[in-house]
Length: 361
View 1 (cartoon, rainbow, N blue to C red):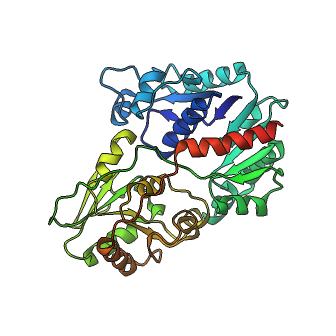
View 2: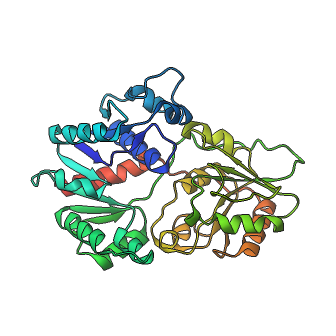
């Protein structure tokens, strides 16, 4: 197949969206498909923080892939905007989109679908229901609803990141008959060997965005109740304006390829979420797939999205309950290490491949 993955991520970057899209395209290309991905260009500072080799050109696709720890297969047509200036990058993107020829479009960005000729089949990969999120925020959902309706009427298939997203979409819009839940994944090399210092105070790790809706306020409120001098490390920064207690430290994001070594330092791993629409229904957290591959105990908010992936293997706490979170941390630190659970990007790509072939049949 000749596939256009329609999303326009910035590369290289540490954001989950960029990591997910680049690895999905790489895995599909490794399976023998020609995959085109049009990307925004990272500035030199952001590219360096994401792992771009020193002195490398941020516009070099091979160097950008190396920042993620990936090779550059011939069938991966990774194109990076020649400038970071948004108007120029936008013009370049539209020009590239108009020149693309292939078999099918796999679109994660709904706003670009109108630019695809009607004779080209489009499959939507849905990670959100923007109209429902706007309603939750008290905003007018109508513009989002119109875009969603037009895109799903245009598509030949829908892939959702989790069961909650697909259920909410099906309750909101008329969807094509072909639909599936295809979860995220991680790399086959993500398993780690615990490298914590024997006898040292236990350390719990959190990786990812410190955005307010991710549930970190409950984490910070729970820290005075943590057992045995346990400490928290936030990889990706602290919530804006938050005062960290003595047993918490914040660090910048680390490149995706460097994350396994960082995870190996921790006695437990933390996945907080709030009980909101995003947490209950719309997330398949990338960090959870990384965490599961390590065999390190995981503390997570007890929500349908985390249960869908982790089953009974995680140490759950009620969302928003600081005392419950502290108790879950205590259970995780006292628990034996679980068996690693590995779902790879190739596993994900194989499911996408089968879905796209079915849409073309």
